[in-house]
Length: 114
Length: 115
Image (cartoon, rainbow over all chains, first blue to last red; front, side, top):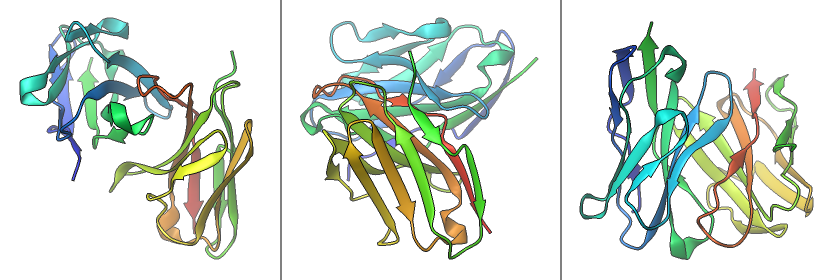
């Protein structure tokens, strides 16, 4: 079955530390990839997306993600986190042939200690 | 610009009661999605519509759940009868166009508690 896996359920780190969240998918076809963020008590917001071209994608708030096709991965990174980055992060994938339907990973809760 | 609007923001009701959640997508968006978020199961797609027509309802948990989209600016998700295990946050999202690279825009969600 097609799936999206986020390996870390919880991450705790201090301000200024670097962050990397893993995301792997099991689709065999051409995919579009997304990272969404959900701040406490809020709705999901788009951080960044990859459709084609440069596999290194830059998003809002200093986040970036790299698509590695051979590894079926789309890991999210930020060199130096802030307390305000405390949130839950979701990786999402859709098959280009499947229209707008997204499959989300289980999410990673990130807590940044001040 | 107005985003996706959901109502109510919070709903607390007793089991057995009918619950209706409402969503107004972003004007011009032709895709609408209903999701359920729980601690145990994460974010699950329940159903989605394209041009008011249900395309995939395979995520709807059981017959107690139903969703409608009578027009391009309004959708409902109904649970009848409700059960405590339906307690969750229900999100509505919308997107534009028939290309799969369009991001979905989410509403603020309805936090549903069934007692």
